Length: 522
Image (cartoon, rainbow, N blue to C red; front, side, top):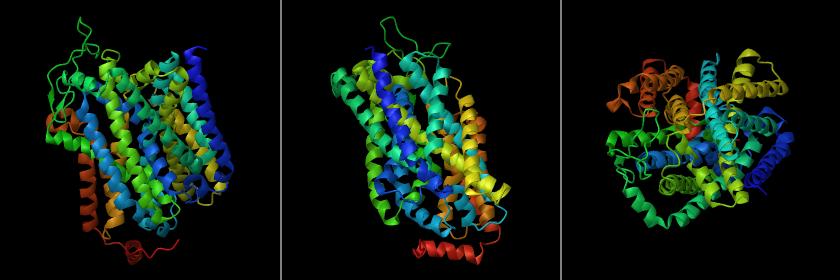
């Protein structure tokens, strides 16, 4: 049997299992919008932890992060991974319990915009509208990054045009999300998180064997200026078309190592700040069945995150040794995981490893689409446009929204030269700066008020666009990751505007104290 057919068979088996989960949970999901969007607050600690991390990492973990390590070495990938690990831990440690408790106190909120709106007891729903709009914008970009992953995966595997394969992958994700809702998504994300970490570990072990051991990999990496340094960055030498130049001896050409200073390190570590505003993770905190189970979830999540991130970075380092001239552009470098899987594993097994990429992509894109759809159907359609809307009408609007968002995401993903890491970094910054500071101040500062919340959201989101599109183009110290300055600016906006405007009402302060003292009842 041809290798391609064997790979396809194993992937079809996996995809069928994912669809089956959606079908099994479809009946329960359609009972009510709370079941569809939050699973009835019934997640256990293992599903909460593993689904949160799987939906967070996406295909970026298996393609984007190894691609960065393959292209320019250890520094960027490692400092990003360290920032993400720290951010994950702090988010579970300081945000999860209080958000679970506060979301119940805030009129049993089941979406993030609803929580912010109820937290400030607003009547005109301006916070809800703004937060829902930002979720729609940034999650559409996020979904596009997942569709790019699908397109690259299938086109590499089967030799079909990228655009066709991207549309096929997006259609599968949309079908699955339409079926099962949040609970099906969380259960399948749990399964997918296992597939992802097994796939990563398998490729590292096989890659090390093929490379002749870790010593050979390190020796090769040390020959490239800056490649294996925490305080230096490898600089591929490119031609006029943006491809890395290969010498006559068949070796990729690198220039002198680029400097990697403290500001750049802080910029990469700033990825960790994004977690405080990441809806797909925050919703898991809200959905766990009991607050006291979050400690166990935190431990599970941290073990998964540390292992997965470390292995993903190492795959890129190993890949540069094994396939030094296979991928000559930054975009192509993101396929190194696929190349290693196809080269060293039997086709049937390679198919299941490829399913790891599909798992990562599905686990994220279904979360993005579902949260964005809920933002529109629950927080705009039902809360503002038609307050008398029934659950059935809300869910119908949600599914229409899913279709529209998927179509927009496909349009964004049409460019086959898109770099997954770059798309994800922008959307990550958007969420981190728009919602991260507001989430922290909402949970831990009694004096924050509605004007401060609005200023923080608008200021954070606006600064992400301004820094990315204008200020960073100046270069030098301004070329840092936009999340860091935008997060700081949003925080300043919240504090200054809150202090200059009227203090929160007595009812809002009573809510805050009840949550702080732990007197909230389910």
